[in-house]
Image (cartoon, rainbow, N blue to C red; front, side, top):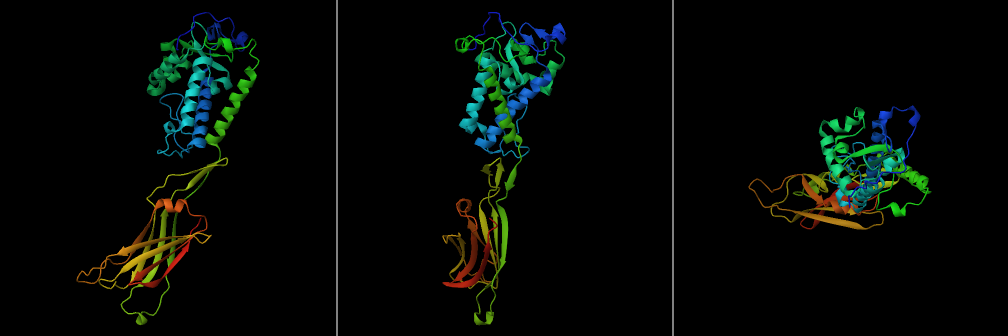
Length: 358
C-alpha cells in the first residue's frame, strides 16, 4: 500500500527556473520555499478547524503537524468537545491523509501549488510512507528545529523528509502514483477545477475557523421582593421576604449562522427563598416553584422542609433552596417566567417571582 514507484518521472512543473540557483532545483521541480509550506499548513489547519466548528463546536481541532496545536476558535476552545468523536472530523483527517498519499497534496498544498514526492521518483509516496512521515514529524517538533530546517537545508527538507526520502516541490501535476495512474486523463483537463475546489475549501475553512463570532450567556440572576402582610393576622406563620432565581445554564456561540450550545458551567439552576420568622415545629412545610412558558405550560417543583424541633425552634432556618434540573431549562420556550412560594400545613404563603431574560 505504501510502495514507492521507482520509475523516473517524465513530466514536472516548475516556476521561474531561469531566475533560480541550480541548487534550488530538483529533477522534479523547484524546491518549495519554507514560507509556502507554512501557508499550506495554515490553510489545511483552517479547513479542519472550520469543519470542527460546523460539525462539533468550538473545540480543539486536529493539526496537520504534530506538536503544533490547531485552535481555530480564537481562544474559545472547549475541552469537552472532542474531534475524535465526530465522524465528519475522522472522515476529513482520513481524506486528507489519502490525498497526501496518492496525489502528493492536501487541499492547502494544492491551493499554493506544492506537492510531497519521493526524492528519487518524483511520485507521491503512498499511504505507509505518508503515515511514517507524519510520525517522523514528532522529531521535527522538538523545539521546532526540524520544522525550521528547510530554511537552511539545501533541499529544504525537514528531518522527516530526510528520513523518508521525500522532497516538497512546486507542482500541481506530479507524476501520478501507480495506483491512480490509470485514472489520470491525458493533459489532466480537470486540474484547474481541482485547484479551484481546494481554494474554495480553504476559504470556507478560514471563514468558519476565524470568522466573526457572537455568543450568548445562559447564566443569569433574577431577584424579586415578596408581598408583605400584617403578621398580627397570621401569628406564628413566617413571612417570605425575597426569592432569587440563579441559573448557570449553557450559553450559545454562533459563527456565520451556525450556532452551538456551550457546555454548562454548573449543575442546573436553583431558586432561593428567604423568610422572616421561625417555622412552626412539626409543621408540614414545603417550598414550591413554578416555571411558566408563554403558551401557559407549567413545570412545578416542591421541596419539603424537615421542621422537627431542635429545642430552639424549628430547623431549618432561612433561606431554603429549590433545585431546578439543568435539562428542564433547555426545553422551555423563550419568554418564560418563574414564581416561588412557601406552603405551611396546606396553606400557601404569598410568594413572588419574575421573568427570565431569555
